Length: 427
Image (cartoon, rainbow, N blue to C red; front, top):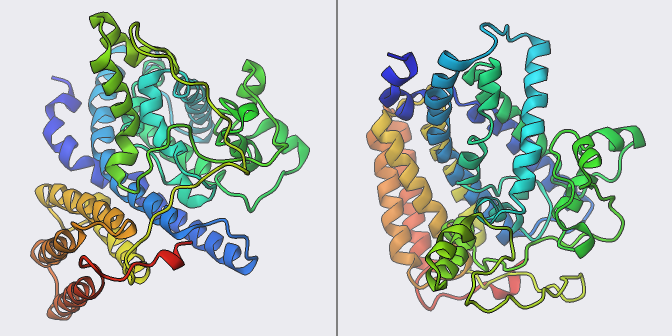
């Protein structure tokens, strides 16, 4: 039997953590984010707001757990296709072939990205990324848990050509990281030949714009020539307004990830015709089932009329969330990195705790009434997990205990119902 199918259970639960390129990329991404924070503060540009940055960062931490399922699909499904249907028996993965694979990924992703803006179910997967209302490296992290799965439905032709699944998985990670670098306003337009061939921050700012002239433009991630060839290119001229129409209006990563699915589900349930209930998922954006009212005409969002989403947050929330972000990174790395001392089951439990944590972050950001009890329970469970799952020396157990007590005291002081809100400091 196929080697990949024989080892499916271990691949699904363990192999991704041992070969996870995202664990290798994470330190570089964090470094660029810290650099952007420093430059933004030094030049007083005001390009990064605290609430959206935390929401974006939390969404990114949780979404890393999806790479377990994605890697399983690559190693099992792609492995089967590669074993049985590849056209070239042996492609030596040298520098040239890695570059050719990178171009293949970029070409396919152009079309996946373009379809993601035109087909309802694919927009549901992609729209969480566009719900950010600013442009910085934190926005690059605001990816969808389902978009990764959707993307890998389309890269399979590369296995038929003969590229190994492990190489495809690695190159898509590299491709994603170079796209990360486009998400900034600190870099203006570059040298004209570069702007003519490659996707630059200027091109990608256009892609995120809700200005009518910018909608559905610049889908390329590495090469902008795909947009020039296929008629989807637009130059950056007027100030870009970021966001999306029908914004989720929430910091909760569950809401951010599944907002548009809920919109489609409501329309599917309301549709009188059974065929329309099914095909709405695969129709172009804006299509309406028979018997439902037409959507009102869109009013263009401009710098003058845009009302960005923000909420009152608990006092003491900023420092707590910054420290929590550090612990969130540690928890994520214990789940995804190859040499983690945690077992497969413990990693799955860690993934659940990570989602629990970032959901609670949304409660802090919006001063939710349920937050105090939920966060106290999460702190106790997380400290217990680190102590129980890791072979720690007494000193580190003591550190964890101190952090746990400090967190509980902080929750009691600031996050109970009736605590002073930080409305005046929301920036």
